[in-house]
Image 1: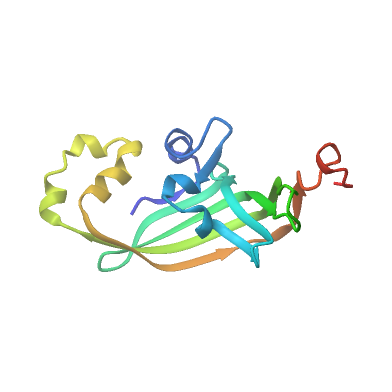
Image 2: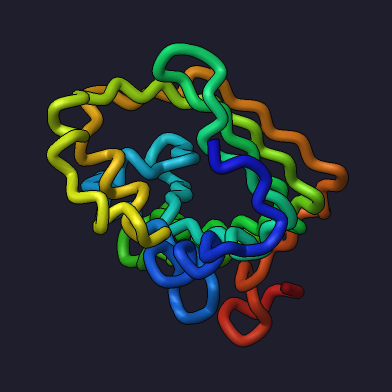
Length: 190
């Protein structure tokens, strides 16, 4: 087991260099995951009014307070926990209002919703079916760097499953909507 990591020990650096953009955000572009626009639809009112998710970004993954990873709790099952100061999710959305009469044009509105939580505790267990022969062929030197541990372990895995997940937060910040019916776009009150 790697045990408790109270200092960053390269984990935050791993997140920053492999997952996060220059602003410290994990950006999930649905198009990169081959999710068709109709599958990202969260609201469709008889083809008159549609709302779809364009992208999701997550902030706070590099604000770890405590990390405990790879703690064996059974054969091939590893318990992991992560405590974060906060997590903020930003959903970039598009709303489309179809014209009611011929000659009218559709109205498109881009806006975002931010959801934030503080003092986040994430506990999860992972079943890791590892091929011992494949793992034995992985050069030890490549695993000695924190950036290489996860890719090296996963390259020898035959099966990876999340077997448990628990998320606790101390506070949920009220959601904030920005960009919807802005004064400069549609004459709304924002």
